[in-house]
Image 1: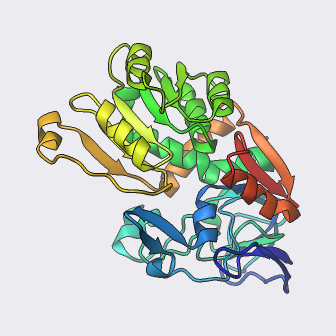
Image 2: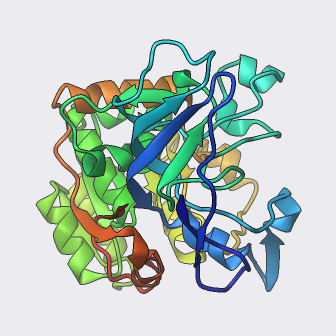
Length: 351
């Protein structure tokens, strides 16, 4: 098999050929048909997270080391199965849930594998989709493509799942009745608009510094798209929301977006931060109880939520995502364009 591998942090991916592995036990071997390119792949490639104030949190601090075959949004076709892999067979096509835990700890038994301290995440701790083949440890992590193309399906393993889970944390009673604020109109922000509409949401105001992405947000159904650096940004948000937005989902996670997101909340509002851009945030502690606001960090959703969002998509309830399709051997180019903000929607690599 051929893989594009991160062999050193801060360096381009290297094309490497190796023997194709054979599945054992409950394992399932997929031939990769599509792999999404996620912004978190940039942090993996860099090897650190910006903690603000000149501080860094490295992948080594998380117990992650090179080589890494990235790509956690994976759709593929089964080419081989282990003797204990039941209910699946070669030729079938699936999208894979990559956020795999040890399966044995209390967190995993509680259905929260994505929070496992001994994670086996595809594309981070196990080889992922920037390769011609991917090994999935068990059929339970697979969802059939049905009528979806691999390119359509792959981004739901992270982009779709993460935004769906973020909306779940905001709460149906909130997003169905009041507008929310979405910070960032990249792949996740645009996906959030699609899912919000599918879930019967009241709508969202979107803030992004890139005019092209603001245009994309309006085309995807945003109530308004504003430049967060504009002097009147707060007033425009309040006008569009007819008050203050009931909740904020931050898909950027920078000093500026965190400050805007927490400042704009009404009393009792919720700020959900997903983005990993980096920085820090200083809060006046008495105002937390006085305003009764909630600040919640969220990385990605559960296996059960993955199945829920895939059910929505399979039933045709979610409008297709805007895609930027490229061949696998252009993985480095895709990462460079993502870093430079040149990708609108979701980049997807194909063989």
